[in-house]
Image (cartoon, rainbow, N blue to C red; front, side, top):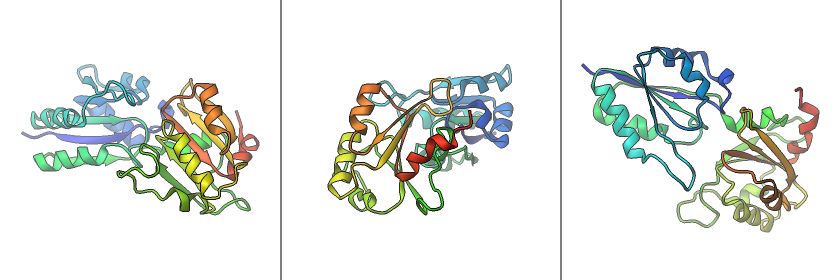
Length: 246
């Protein structure tokens, strides 16, 4: 008899930020397939007889191929088990959640998705930065920086984005930050535009580096910031200190 798969977004990394529905799913799981960005403290909440399978992905390093992750979750579900794919980072905005959904559908496995708290907003908020603020701007946009401007795989018009008047939240953008910032500056974005980079938001190792679009590349290099990190570009970044409550 077929089991089922529940894709659970784990949010930005703090175990207190998982949704009630997500925690309930963990507690009924027979198998938990977890990546390196999940709040690992929550694995203490699963049943003693449940199996935990790590499927880590390190940017430009060791990783479990997506096809292997798909195979694992489908295989266990077809064996009649309730499989929770516990996903860190920001699967609601980016990530492989939909590919896993498709793999389940293709195999005839029942699948559901429980979104987590989006790190694209939570990361900024935890640093005391509102992504919008009346009198400063009217909106924000979240984009992936996993490919640079001009790359054939890319779909972002960084030039138009730079002059949009919106807060720009960049996920997975640390590696190509030099190319991204150079393109936005060339499009006319003021070099003095405030920028903040939030590393490992909602974890004990969280760090925030504040700079400007003209200097952020050197600031990131000097600080040693590494992925996962959220980069926030826009005047709201300068409001950050006034919103810090801890």
